[in-house]
Length: 304
Ligand SMILES: [Zn+2]
Ligand SMILES: [Zn+2]
Image (tube, rainbow, N blue to C red):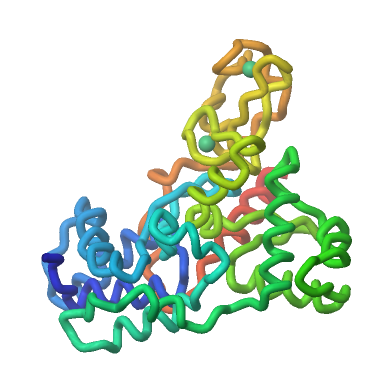
């Protein structure tokens, strides 16, 4: 039997519900904050075990808190995601995380664990069919691209040929804004990429659906979208930009780890390892949306 959630676990989960995704340093600070607030035993190296207790309770609802690396800043994040291993077939029926989890939190303690799958599927969906089709087409463009992005122009062209129901330009822009707001997509200068949370949640699905196109990073073995690619045509391995930065750090003669050809791309240096992130720098701020993008921007500004 899964251990019932203590008040400290519930507070942690509640903050995850509000934020959707937080970086590793924030997660560690939040762990401490939740334990101290509720007088629960705290050990700094027990965050994984702490999250396992929550995940055991989330499992019947096909949700989990998962760890993953951001393709943009290379930091490790914790995200509250659907467990796509069990709900692959329902890919497009995203239920509203918040609604589902509020139900979960408000239900009597110990948490009701017999919520049937049918109850989950009956939950309201966030997007209309043509909006989901647009998202799917955007994903196609992103996975098909060399750099893991799709331009707004290309997405707008897709919107004109949707099978479910065409979207006008303004409607498309509105849907794209919502997808960014709901943290499915990131947007930078009119180019869209899949958000860290989206990739974490959809990794299994992306591997299944795009098995011929998608490659995994040669270094970390996760799906690689925003990455650099070996230019040797018989090799062509991909490495995430942050993984490139870490792997080639300090090497004067960068060579492909697979074929040993010269690595012709610029080696970025704006990534810090997650462990060098000071915990005091990012104290747990409950109910505060994370700002991974603005952090990355600051770093880039500093570099130039
Ligand atoms: Zn990688
Ligand atoms: Zn190579």
